[in-house]
Image (cartoon, rainbow, N blue to C red; front, side, top):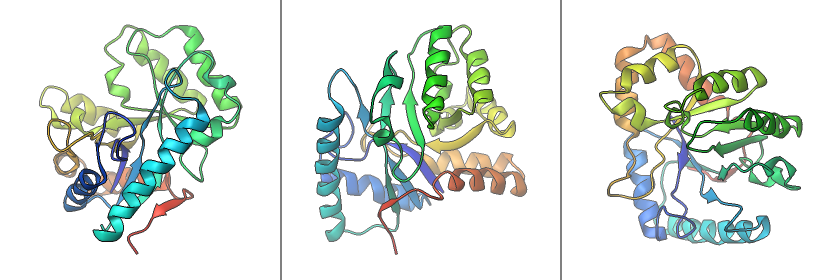
Length: 240
């Protein structure tokens, strides 16, 4: 199982504050059956330039890997980030650096508002640069008028969707979440975990619900799609 969206890297954003907490979060995911984790710290263009962010991310990764030498986990780790959209994002010269290492996939956080046609156009410009956007926690945007239709439009252009486990875990939203998955719209689940308290890993509940509601074949197909996204990705830590 793959956790495609986490804030486990220590001291880089509003997620884990230190390497020890990061390891505890990874151990919690391991206990929940997760075997692949994508590390996706926030990238805000207004807070960092690309070079400074890369330095800070490398430093956070070094701290985490140091802790994992003392306390190994049975999880493969991959490096990426969650890039906050802005209108000129497609103009960023080294946008490829923000992709999941070894791939052309870039995880995008879009505005929490009704989207304009220009947003769709700008996302298409990112695609035209040879990258494949994955919309982070797409379910958070669909309450805004017109956004679901624009999501369908962007999917036709090749955009992929990541769903947070919380959408499957909440009683009031889980049926709608399941419908999206049955339609084949969702390529990956993420815990979007930030800490060990109010935003801790919650993958096991989501998977238990899916296994209950999907046929074994449909569940295997969903799991296969998630793993396929990381087929060519570069591991930064291996459980082997």
